[in-house]
Length: 377
Image (cartoon, rainbow, N blue to C red):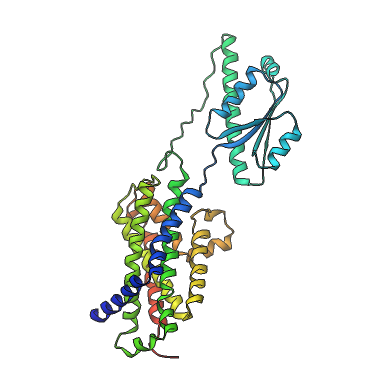
């Protein structure tokens, strides 16, 4: 590989990117826009669930029970109703996701020491939110029940019994349980895959459509030099995007980077080389800019978003789909970047994922170089 020819191809591609404002906008503005939109709009947290209440008891005891809901960040009482018809209307209109119905004998039942049923109606059209809301409602009810039990025993002069098991949960790596800390590092992988493949998917097909490929073929530049030379400018742009994404994640969204920034950039570079190679391969095969763009989006965005474990756990997918995920490179990079971000792990813990990521980069660039033939069809 001749370094002078390689540098000449890279310089030519750099000049094209600089002179084409659309490429610069696509390369810089689009990743920042995606990060802003996904960072602010996409969340897995279920907080401030709107709730309506039908309090048939209207006693201090029922209000105290409802306070266990309102004092947490999980529920917001939006209105009080007086019939099931109003409950149904509020849920149908999506004004509320949860309804709590307290019976009229709530206070009397507690005074007698009886078990008092309280109805919780949950909108199940969103199963994930409904499951979490039911869990929060059970926890609020359990807390109030324990308070009532302790108070009743104290009035009778009996010490409250100690629980045989004292569970003390401790959350590691994401203490505040913020889904943003989980989403942003994975989003870097999705953005890199899409942008890198999208940019390089036009690199070779553009030469064919503009008729400049014949001139390149007539030069002594080898196929490998042409492929690598065209990748260099987009590699630099991709690294710039990674740095911008890391800075936005830390200073704009408050996502902690507990590991080494150098390691994050190193692993990002390996993944970026593979993504660029995929785009070049698509460009070499299609020789058409429109088709290249469509194939790049189809082969990068959807697998990276749906099949990488970015949002949806791979273990919950059908077995056939789980097998498909093994050929999605973003799956390995997301594991690596999240471990670096949230756990501060080093490469010794992630050797298999790193090895598979390196294999992907080498194989895909080799395929691109082999697919490009320096001759006219």
